[in-house]
Image 1: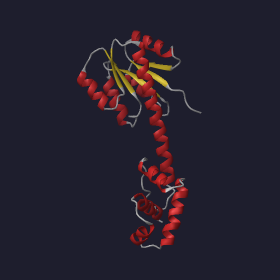
Image 2: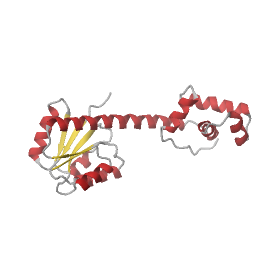
Image 3: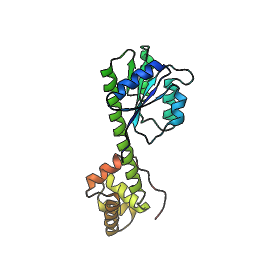
Image 4: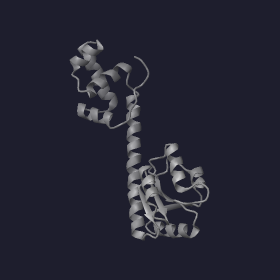
Length: 210
C-alpha cells in the first residue's frame, strides 16, 4: 500500500506555521509541523514520502544545518523547500547546490507555494521509484556468480561471445550458458534491456567466487 505523502513544516514562527498548514490542507495534503529542526530530525522516517517546508533562520539548528544533517544520514533525496524572510542570494545558491528544490522569499502567494510543493512531491516520488528500481537491480545482481558477473561485464562492454570466451579462457558454450543464466537472473529478454538495467542502476559486484 502506498503511503500518503506528508508536507512537513519546520518553522519557529507559530503564526506562519498555522498559515502554511491552512493553505496546504486546503488542497487535501497532509501536514506535520515542527517548531525546531531537531524535533523534525528526531521523528524523521525515511520511508515516509513527502517534502519539507523549511525556515532558514531558527533558534538552535538552522534550516541549512538541518539540510546538512539530512545529507549526512543519507536523506538527501527528501525534497526541501526553503522559506526565508530575507532575500539572501548567496545562501539561496548554497542550499540549492546542496539539493534544495526551491527557495521562497516571504511574502509569497498561495499559488506559488502550492506549485512549489507539488513540484517537490513529484521529485520525491521519482526519487523513491528510482531507489526501488536500484534496490531491485542490486538484488538481481547479487544472484550472479563471480563468473556470470565477468560475462555480464563483457556483454555490457559490447564484446562478442568469442572474445569473452578467449579473455576468460572458457569455452564458447560455457559463455553462452552463463549469458543465458545472466539474462534469466536479471529478468531481461534482450541485450539492450540488460545493458540499460546495468548502466542506469548503481549495482555492486558481489564478492563471492564461483
